[in-house]
Length: 376
Image: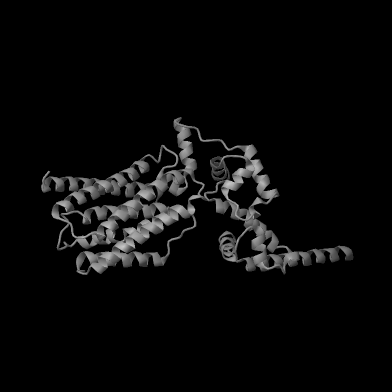
């Protein structure tokens, strides 16, 4: 096949990529515009569309007036991908201002490399940045995989994230290669476009089936597992599993009475072994029966309540906060302070001061009422 035929295939594949990316962004923002994960996913899709355009062999050199805008959208997509992975796999993640600064820096480097840089050092720096962000995104997947309780997110997002990470790594590695021949460049460009189309196609398929299938990428990102289950039941495809009341009572006994959350290094595997049930059933129970998306958040709920009781106890006013945190099951003071502040909007010290003040006020009021009763 001649170079003109390869170019036609290349442009056709890239056109399909652009169309699917814009479809993903539009559907996601239409249905879940308030979700940070979906907004970042839409930005990622738009950036992928821009990347498909600016890496095309027909992209204008020198640049036309609209080219810098395309380069800006594509340039920082590695940052957007990393932020999307953080938001998708960490329920407590919040986008901060410095994230925008990082995006601007990487975008500026991409723009400089594409427009003016003649030094290979800048190309290598950009490739290393892209590779590093892809590895950070993959690390986020591995770091939170064991504690993730959302079945759809565990099944599908891991596959998509690894696939996207692999794609970015391949693109970054290609940038380290020497200048290829013209024929090799044409074949590589077609292969690049075909791989991108496959990745975007899988994402689009999962997005469009979100209304009918539990655990789709979009549903798992927004936490709408219950809605997906109701849809399945309505359509008669598969009934959502009923929560096992007896198992729920056993779990409550283990956590409330036996205080299993205080056990050092407690994992969902060890907890399921104590209950004598498969791990997947316990994940399902905690997620669908109790509404928790993360196992650590499930444990911390009990631990925080335990700590609040101790901090509000006048007989423990002199017990150090670290001791209370360790007794409740936390391994160090830093995670305890962050979890406590996120739950109560107060630091442990502030909570203790207010709780003890309320207790003292109640005692004084009871004493006054007793005195009034005696005098009467």
